[in-house]
Every structure is written in C-alpha cells, then in structure tokens.
Amino acid sequence: MRVLVAGAGISGCAAALAASEAGHEVTLLEVGRTAGGVLRDEEINTGSWYRNCQYFNVGTEWFDLFLRCSGARFTMFPHRYGSWNDLFMTRVAQQDFAQVVVPGAEARPITDETALSSVADRLSRYPHSVSKEVRRWADSWGDLETLHHENSDLMQVGRVFHCDDVDGTISCKRLSEIGELLYGVPRDIHRPALPVREAALPIDGWNRAFEAVTRALVARRVRVEFGARASVRLERGRVQVDFLQETCSPDLVVWCANPHPLMTALGLGRLDSPVTKMSSLLCEVDGSLPPQPMYWQVFSRSMPIVRLFFHEHRQVPRLTVEAFDSRLEMPEVAKLASEVLKDFGFDMRLKPVAVVPDRRYVLTTIRDRDLLSSMDDLATRVPVVTGGWSFFGRDQRIGHIFRAMRDWNAL
Image 1 (spheres, rainbow, N blue to C red):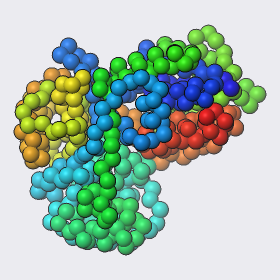
Image 2 (image 1 turned 90 degrees about the vertical axis):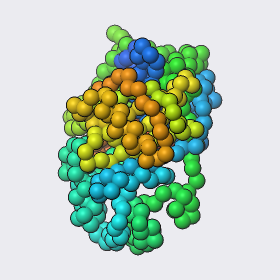
Image 3 (image 1 turned 135 degrees about the vertical axis):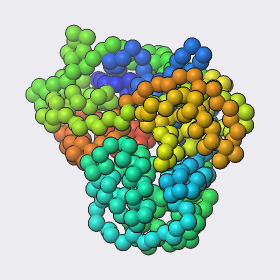
C-alpha cells in the first residue's frame, strides 16, 4: 500500500513510523524545514528551553512505537502537577490537582443534566459565586459563548475542587453524571486514590529527538520531503496530492497538516480557528529545585501567568513561564513566578533570559467542532485519515489516527 502522510509533527511522524513498520511504501511531507511542529525547542544564545509544557504519556501504543523505532532518548518521571489561585481572595497552593480550587465554601450539587454546549454554558452550571470568578479568568482565552465546552479541559477549568469540603465534593461527584464531570479531587484524595502516571521528555530536547526520528524514517526507506507544501484535490472520488511539482495518487492519505486544504477540497469551507495570544518567559534557575519535571497551573485575578513548567533541558535546569500576552516586563513576571513557587515550597532564583511570543490555535468553536466531525465522515469516502482534530488531547488524536489506519489495513 502507498501511504502519504502530510505534516511532520508528532502525529505525522507517529503515523509514518507505524505505516513503515507495517511494510507500506510511505511518503512524509512537511512544509517546514524540520520535523516536530509545535513541539520544537526554543534555541537562544545561552541555551535551549521547552517553550511550554509538552511531555509524552508513557504506556500508549503510539509512544511505545515512537520509543522503539525512533532512536530518540527519553527520561521517564512521575507526572506531577499542582495549581495555584487567588480567584476567591485567598491564595491556594494545591498539590496533585491542576484545575481550579475553591476555598472556604461548600460544594453544591449540580442537577441540570441538559447537554453542555459552550464553555460559558459549562461554567454557568456552578453556583454563581464560583462561576463568576472562573469565567472572569477564562475570558482571557476568547469568546466563551462560542467555544465548545470540551475546550474547558484544555483551559484547565473543566473541574473544580472545594478544598475545605472534600466529602461534599466527592458526594456531588457521585450524585449525578454532570456532577462527576464538573467536580474533581486531587489524585491522593480520590476514592480509590489515582496512581501517578509516568511521563517522558527527550533527554536531548525535542529538536534532537525529531532529528533522530527523521533519521529513523529515512533508514526505513520512508521518503521524507521538507519544504513541501501539499495541496489536495478530489478527482474521481479520490484524493490527489500535489507537491514539489509532482502529483501523487496514494492508496491512503493521512492528513496531519493544517486541515484547511483538506476541508476546502471536501467543500466544507474554513474553520473559525480562534487564536489566543500568549508568551513564554524563559528563565535560568537555581536554588531549591524539584527532583523531576513539574508544572503548576496558575489562576489569578491580577497576574497574567497561566502555567509554570520546571524541567531540565540537556541536563540544565530551566523554567518556562507561560502567560497571557501582557505588557509586564520580564523581571516583574519572574518576580511573580517566584512568589507562586514559594507557596509550593520551592525557593527558586529566576534569571529571565527571553520572552517568546506564541499564537496558539488549540481551541475550537462549536461550529468548528461540527465542521471537523463532518470532515471525519467525508474523509473516509476518499480515502483519507484525518488528524483527529475533533478530539481533545494528543493521545486521543493519535489513537484516532491509528484506529482509522487499521480500518484501511494500513497497520
């Protein structure tokens, strides 16, 4: 079988590895000059950083394949996290829970079982005192009335935990399906306690990891073409892909690149593609440091910080501070980050090095979700495997790709 994979991010690389291991003739196209997509490191004069909190979950089928076939080296560690917020006038630092924590209030049952629509609708199901503050913070992501409610998980506002009413929170979770969805508890409090999952980061950084992936693909006789902008069209009920002055008629296309060319070819138009303007402050660190990579979600009334991600990059400790786009100067953001870290018991000395602008296209509107679902349905007739954009989360998206490839006997 001739398999063409468009896009050399992690999804496309995983698909190309899987298809080549299954013995197919594989072509991998990438419009950029390197593999890796959004995972690529930020390289500056004084070193390298992970631009944001991007790790792999250990134990998935696709990561096992990636680990076995790519030649990239990974370090494994317990996936630990926490959250910090001052949304309710009290500073709360919570371990083992990366979403909103509500202090000093009882959990209230949620009984409205009507289907959720938007993020605004989802947040409105909480009591007003909770909903008002969480929504005020979440407004920085975009128009909550139009965003599909499952975006709440990406925004880390999908669940809340009443830290001074543990039994009440657990009771509200058990009372109804909507309560189970909207309330959460830390892993160690959950009944039964939830295990700490194992995660992985590349020892030498993402850039070198994807260089290893590229070498592994070429060694497997995958045709890898960089600087290859692919266009797609339908001809006699099948997809034709044009690139580098060639026309390819593969038996199966796995489209992990920008979905717009495929959507246009299928007559679906364009997505809304809401953008969130963010920035990453890259810091050198020393002092009191965690023993392994960790991240902390931040929900604040006044500071723009969204997440702190501590990691070692090529065995050098680093901190990446993700923030909503703001006019704060680097030293001021670093000072605020240090204050948050102290509440978790880490007295880190932060030396800000650079600010990297970041335009994120991670959210989908309700309309987008409908269009993406339509694309999934239409693509199966062509035949094309889509990049799983109607799913939230990397594991779910790549899992979709692998299942669909199996349906076409490509795995």
